Image (cartoon, rainbow, N blue to C red; front, side, top):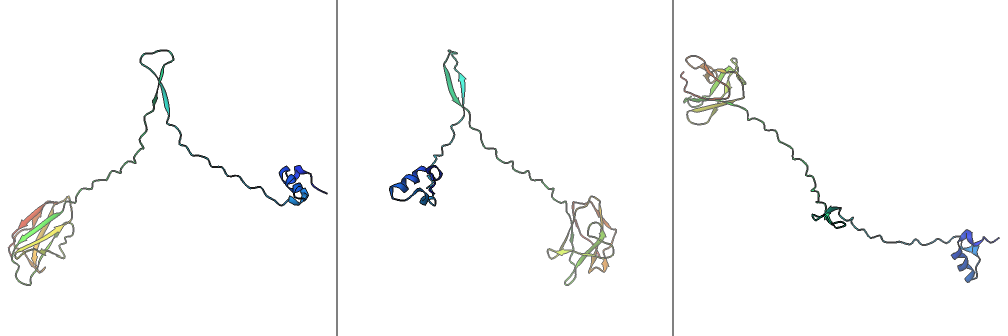
Length: 168
C-alpha cells in the first residue's frame, strides 16, 4: 500500500510522481539543511536623554553615557622587611704567620666553651659578623682558640660595630 503524501512530505511525493516512481520509494531521502549566516553586530552604546538648557517642550538632546574604564587589578603591597641589625666585631692585631684569631663569649653564635673563627681581611685586621640580638654581647679574643687576650671581657650592644686592639 502506498503511503499518503503527507507522511513522506509533499515535495518528495511530487518528485516521485514526475519520474515514474511511487511516493513510497522516497522514504530514504533526507532534506538538505539550509545554512544562514547571522551578522554579528555589536550593541549600540547606551544613550541617556537629557533636557536642554532652554527647557523647550519636546526638545531633548541625546548624550552618550561616559565609557567605563576597565578596573585594573590592585597591585599587591609588598611588605617591607627590616634589614637585620648585624653586629660586627673587628680586631686590629698581627696574630703572626699561621695563627688565627677566635672569639668566645655570650651572644648569638658565641660560646665560652668553643671559639668562633674570625675572618682575616688584611695584614692586621680580623672581622666577625654576628646575627641580630637586642641584648648586649660579652666576648673575649683568643689566638688559635688557646691563648686568651689580657684584660677584662669586652661588652658591646647588639646591632653595632666595634673595633678593638687586643693585647696578649
